[in-house]
Length: 131
Image (tube, rainbow, N blue to C red):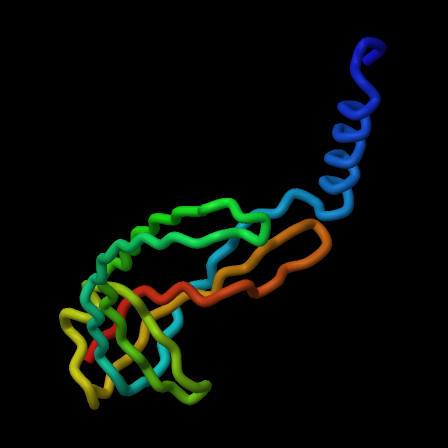
């Protein structure tokens, strides 16, 4: 380490400190869980594309031209309502079989971030639903 720069040594030290403080995190999943729900909305938004250009002037008199493009992909979404509130799933395969008013059973897993110091619930992993 004699030839390493001071900045590089500091970066190595900070990395080691962060690893020591946070521990090595890993992801764990619960067993599959289920919950009754109702489908409240089935939403489709088509893709949108466009472009435009403009011209303006800065405060010092420089002429500025801008060109912009917009490409928004289509969205397939389903809004579920369960005893804990509403949630949205944006997946085409789910959208294809969903109908407003359906009473369903939602299948999901809990996702945990685990270190040697803590196990923290970070999100829910939606798997599927059955009528």
